[in-house]
Image 1 (spheres, one colour):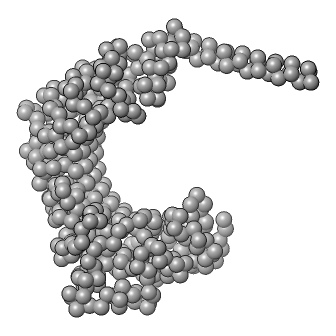
Image 2 (image 1 turned 60 degrees about the vertical axis):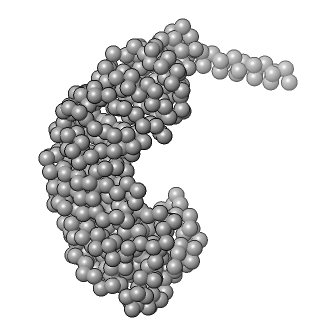
Image 3 (image 1 turned 90 degrees about the vertical axis):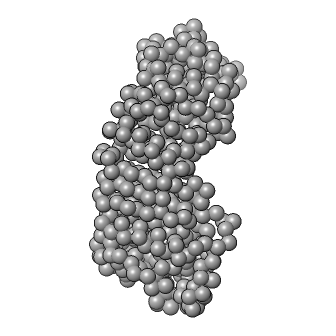
Length: 452
């Protein structure tokens, strides 16, 4: 027993020695390396390293990145932190606050240090944006979420280095966005997340802008027209209100869906069909398309009502939806109108049923029960809770039958599909590779063979 006790004591002493050596090794590193390490952690934690030893007391003060996002600091603590900060150049300044008391001062602080990546989120408070904010030749990435603050530059905007711009919950008019874009000659990515007052988004003069993301809803409907002849990638989460893609002639990739409040009892199905089909026409030449469940439901309604669908040049099609009756007719028509399709991906995503679909079909003199049945007579489930293994098999068979040039199917299924693992070996089809991901396992099926 004494021998064991002595052995354990020696091991503990050795561990303490190793920790001390490691601590000394880290402390001996140059400040620039230590500051790079501290850039990778929240500012609150970086400041706490000043308690380690005298060597660490002021290291954090020259860290070129400040993050006030992982906790909600009060104004006084932010002010105190900035008063000790001495780095002449800033790479990142990220702030999430519920106060607008010192916003003007904090923005000027970051701009005075030629910040390159600036992110500011103010909740529940409107704030005045200082004029100096719009004059910054060093900023490369800018993210503002401002609780519907008016973003109205009085003079010219000078963001000559800006490549990525995110505006969220802002009020920005057509004139203001035009002035902002004119001051961003190298802008590559633009995200507009629930931006009010904006009606016509004209990007025709933004020659380097290749990626556009727009989020709309029933309360923040803008923009209603998008003119973007140079963009290659479009991500549009649309509302129930009309939106027109006037010119997206350079598109190679698009992701589309529609959001609506589950509290709504009815929707204007006629308006939705017209809007979605016009959008689909503008996407004819894109090689990569992704459609959400609500978008697919509107396409299904249009198909059942005999609306003409355009032919598509898509090679890679992704569907983010539940397998259920309200999306099947639209998917079937998409496959039939995509003669170049090589790869189909289904990502299982929960989505609500758009209200009033059956009632709308009835007003058109159609029988909903017969309409939602596939041409092969399959009765599809009405929601994800009614999903059975036969529906997955039927879905794969529908895809293979309607996509003649298809080479690969990816089924990325969530926990609702885990009970169907035993039927997966029956899903193999000649000449089509079928990849199925259930939870964290990938099951490969090719021709008549499958393995786990």
